[in-house]
Length: 183
Image 1 (cartoon, helix red, strand yellow):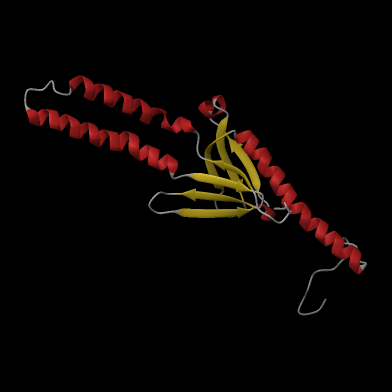
Image 2 (tube, one colour):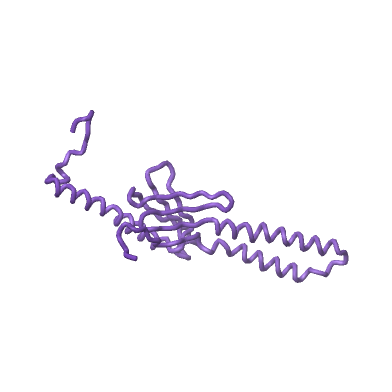
């Protein structure tokens, strides 16, 4: 299989930083320890069943739901576009083409700068910027997005220059404005 410039290749697959699963993991260990310590120590059987039911409910709320929410966010960067997928039961997919051009900004709070992650804001000129939340290696992702955008814009400029050289007009002198059907 040959690699032509027109084939789209995946550059990176990203999720939010795994630090988001720290507290759910701590809660799971604490709940397991608590249930292991208190299981069977109550005199009434319904109390032991209530302990297990409460622990199961807390595991779902404190551990399973944050894990599912974390797994439901994915960012895919290809050579042509950025694909954002969010949601678990209701999927939302958003795509941004590199060739359209955009502005990339990285915002980091104190904890994110320690872990070298950050929020990447992609301003496409629309109402609200697209945000890749808590991406690991945020500075590297920003540099990669700048490179991909520059590479996707250069073929357009090269094609226009090649067309201008074939027609004998320079791109600076070409009049591409059409007013009322006249050229």
